[in-house]
Image 1 (cartoon, rainbow, N blue to C red):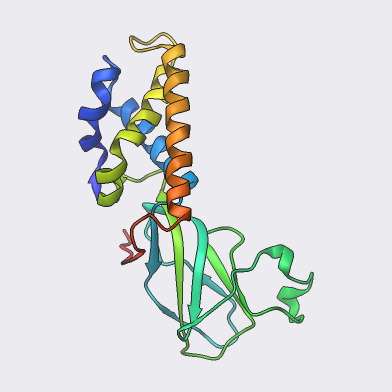
Image 2 (image 1 turned 180 degrees about the horizontal axis):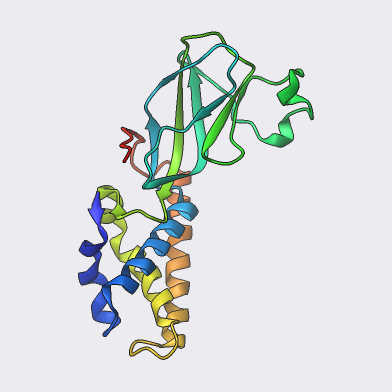
Length: 205
């Protein structure tokens, strides 16, 4: 994990007088938006075992992470379909006939349908973003995209009224640049240009 302080050399020279607390807030929002729009931070979570009669399972992530999208899943090594609520009958949670697969409604938990027996291994691959309380970003995100995230943070800070660094015209330019980079990286990720999804271990506080 790379702390927000490591971004400051990229950020503060362009926003003179910005206090670190404001800079951290802007960086956190920019990192969250960058990861959500690009899906560049994707991981295979630790495997879980199914429980008889259970359809709802937690995503095993820590409090510094949030799920953006459920990308892939396997059950006992076999691929599972990624479903949406629109794929399900109205009585799916009352024992109605359901397609086989997984879906998430709140991005904190996921549902496995139909109910399975005990002890089958289920694995999920997800796109992540830093949580609103995150103290930094994944090292690989910093190493590859620190400048992009700082561009988004600068755009946000420069829109702040009556600050030494207030500059609405430059904020708009930075915002356009940030949006363009988000779109470009998203296209790269979609073409599997991004790094191979890695396994992550959740840490709870």
